[in-house]
Amino acid sequence: MRRLLAGDDEGYYRDYRGTTDELAAALKPRLALHRSAFGPRRRARAGTDPTGLVPERFVFALQNHDQVGNRALGERLHHQIDLAA
Image (cartoon, rainbow, N blue to C red; front, side, top):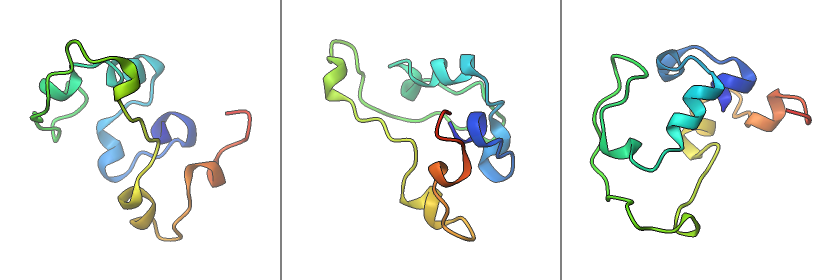
């Protein structure tokens, strides 16, 4: 979302294009089990097979402590984009 809405393209954001198609792919349940096609630095991740789990069992977050804490000014996404976005 940060790449898509705020346009960040440095660090690990380089591996993303920031498209809505890419965002949709990231939300697919099996992504955590396969190698990502988003960039050369991305590695396969192990995870629990989500087959059969209901959507209510998942947690989605737009940012985490590392993403905010590693920013020079600690700005959160909502500080950098318009409310409409």
